[in-house]
Image (cartoon, rainbow, N blue to C red; front, side, top):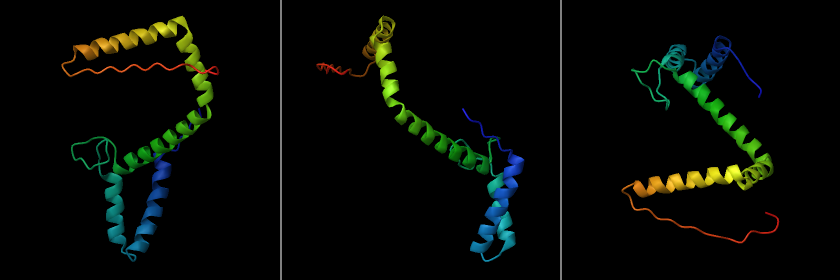
Length: 137
């Protein structure tokens, strides 16, 4: 897997200057307001959902936003990779399920799940459907 490592010290000033320039343009060159806004963005501590949290000793909003965006991109890349490998994944899962060990693991998981569901005070509903397999499966 490829690793991208850009230091915060290198990235922050570049982004800060770009945001300052954009905000200055929007606000008609009022530098003091722009500096205050940028400072708040860079220093405000947030919780795991990106909401300001004065009790948090965690990430700043900027760090949270950067992590959030990188996470979205990585999820998209993984989804694309999974789509391209679906056929191979299906074959591997099918092979595992058809093996004696795989069948035992699945049966054990199913029975354990059923037992725990039946122990629960909620109403349990079971539905089992059987379909004839096609020859290419």
